[in-house]
Length: 267
Image (tube, rainbow, N blue to C red; front, side):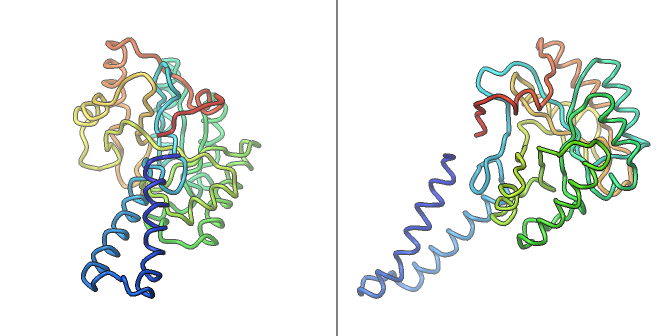
């Protein structure tokens, strides 16, 4: 069990003891009680924001122990203007990657999703609406969103999606509950370059990713911008990342290969 979840359970148990202590005449002073509530609330919020802690859901952030190779993953597509050139680049370098796609874009560009699948890449769910506030949504709203995205993907590939990456990486207790219901594997990352920002440059993206580029790394990049309002520097940055990987004798592995292993170190 992740350490963050152990702390959550312990602190929740301690919080439940506060009213009992107050009833027995051993309650905390009002300021101390307020401070404890604020600290607990801040900790829970951090667990949502930093989903890699595994506070509410098991999140795969890197390959299994003794893994070799690097898994490339791409978010916020599909978009024919940017995803198709990336697919050509990946073909040229014989790399199989994972694309976490947005449901409403899947419906808009089904031929691009079909092409991703045809070329042998993995597909994962990146929600339907890509709401940045999804971690505040109730379970019913989350369930409807993910089911709609999954249905759109399955209608094209005839395969049920297995992987999920949360919009902006936040996972709330409600989202974690729905992921368990839908049997989706939450996937995070261990290296990212922030190429989803319009201000990003290929050099800064490659530099940031390079700091975490090692065996077992899950690399987060973007094959399209979230709103389709600019062209990410993905391919230019990827060429630099690829050179760094070659210098370090790193190969590439499909994410599905790792997630089909019996034991994953997802901490």
